[in-house]
Length: 253
Image (cartoon, rainbow, N blue to C red; front, side, top):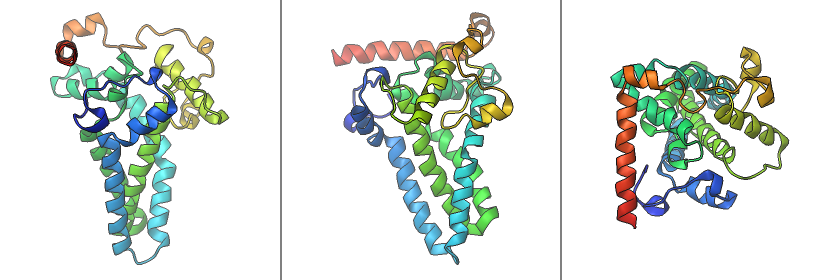
């Protein structure tokens, strides 16, 4: 599990068995969401203290939010769906946590949320320089705050896409349909979570499962039995997770 206090203590959340209300409660009590919101608040205060013009940090925040779908697409396609990470002992554990586990069990909320040790450095490395270029120090903090807020929005939209729930908004229904096809039909397309614009731009969009062949690696992301034999680190970590889960269930019984 990700944490051991509050509503997340000794609980396993499966999104395909949750209501929207249950998701909202679990979402806002998760420590990563609380961390993003706290950091966004702090960064906003610092930005306001540093600003010489209201419009400059606001523009930095807007530019950051506008570029987020592109960053989301590039990270998802070229990093999370890469094969190089499981081929190195030093990155295998990170790759397993940030994406392999999610494709193994797409509805498990505990592995759907990003890991803070990867998300926060990524947010900082992209948002701070971008904001600084737009509006100096105040812009850097405004951009960081905006990125944290937008990332919370991304996490919530991603959660909704795994709920047994039909969104009323047509664009969200379409996003959900495309995302579920990414998880259960062919993982080499529909990389956008909050927008499919960049899938269209880069030619990875498909509207219906029938438009693409069924992928044999949709759940293992290319970490096949041959890959496990050559690069065993993810498999070894998965075995440790299974042992931990069994022990945890016994303690809870």
